[in-house]
Length: 394
Image (cartoon, rainbow, N blue to C red; front, side, top):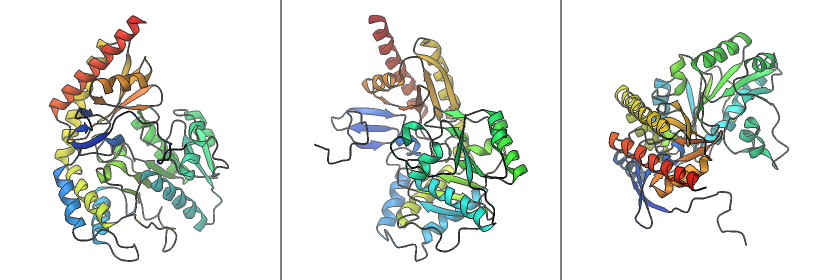
């Protein structure tokens, strides 16, 4: 008999009832240090007082009105994003996969309006852009697409890091290149700055639009407001979600005026996208995260965390291979099965997130304390020691 909740998730045997800062409390009273942050969603931790205040204040005034009307909180957040980024315009969604769908539509409408037959978007192995039909077609992996055909056409999938294949794929039929500056689900694989600059140059040479998926790596996660800023380039279109809402469902597509030129009245819409509650919280997140002082602290904490993780890897060479990532978007490449490390973490009170390439993701709240960083490494050390004992016993 099927469960009342559609059984599409493989859930851990944990039920959390409350949270505060970087910690979650299980129904039985146990506390867990959260190094997953809802998969890079809870950028400011759990129950951050400023976000609680923003949400409750807005909730007492107005929850929802249709996008048939002006929404002041939406306008405020759009203005903040435009002011802090490359973008000239923003559209608000409820999730990253909705942002992916609009980015795809925006590209195709752009070329349609120019009368050019450029239907193909180049994407890369290991990518994750969401689970809607357009997003899984863009990523192309068998794990996400098997059984869901026929898939949306118009995507060419290239091996990650294969420069020759990229050069060979470029033609006057290419509409856009879609890439994550740091792959999250793909195993915490940062795209080197030189490669991101090369993609921008390639796009400029051939009139191709560059779409960046910063759903997981954006909103301060790498120590810049958006990860592409490290390379000094700007995209034409960018997908944002996760951390922008601090835990409240919110996403966005940011675009230049040129890239967005085809998106006129009636070409796209959303019932809930940009609602007053979400945008009130998103604006408060921006007020906190998009400051030099906050981002400087992210970078300092990232350096501290990485240094301690390097020591952890050195102490357990039979468990770990290396540390990878950028800012507070870090991964432990494992020699043991990564899911075993995640489970050993549960037993030691720490939450982590598995990824491809046998990596365990560490995506803590951006405001995690130094003491919690130290405790996190102590817990991971205990988890690794437990796995070492299991290996020895075997």
